Image (cartoon, rainbow, N blue to C red):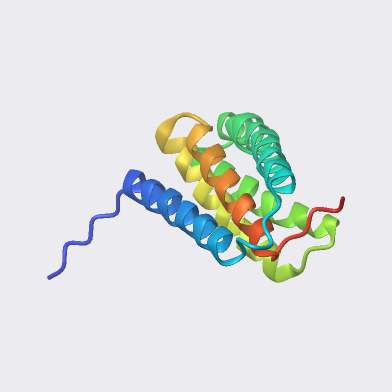
Length: 140
């Protein structure tokens, strides 16, 4: 009886908006603690990290696996590998499972748009949000 249409483009826009609002909210809550030089470093780190990971995982590995196997298997394998590679940095299995899910989302964004740019944007926003909120620390 219900017609639930799922649009990846609308989901992408919603995720971007939600991430930006969350970043602004955290900055407003912590406005007395915000130092602008570290914030710029966080934005630079998040952008650079997201660019390198998206080029590697979606730009190179996903496209190569799709040519070797098929789209579904390539997406699943790269998503699992993307999630599990965080365990070597000391993150918990729960974070790895979350990253597997994010890898699926980033892969879907890449496949539907035929570009890594949407995945790069969301990846940057999510990394920035996690660092600003204090859930993830940069080892500096």
